[in-house]
Image (cartoon, rainbow, N blue to C red; front, side, top):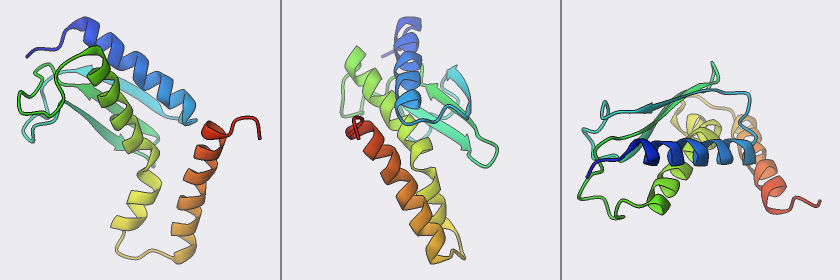
Length: 125
């Protein structure tokens, strides 16, 4: 199945929603509607340079028929959420992938994510 410009607009809007909720506004975000990185069966993907605070969020033009979720507005929103989560979780995943990491770095990354989740899930506190 092919995604449409309308699907892409939904994808961008949903990404921007979650970028705002997670407080990732200091990122320079680029959007793309292409099949450049579909070799691994993705329906969307994120390429990030979190040190430079730049990310490219892409919705694939071809929706993988083997993907567990059928193409719909809701599945586009779910894909957008997942790709923004890759940016959100980068600090923790980069610690996990580092050859040498200090315990305090992991602790800082973990608590940074917890603070964001607290502000999202418990906004009145």
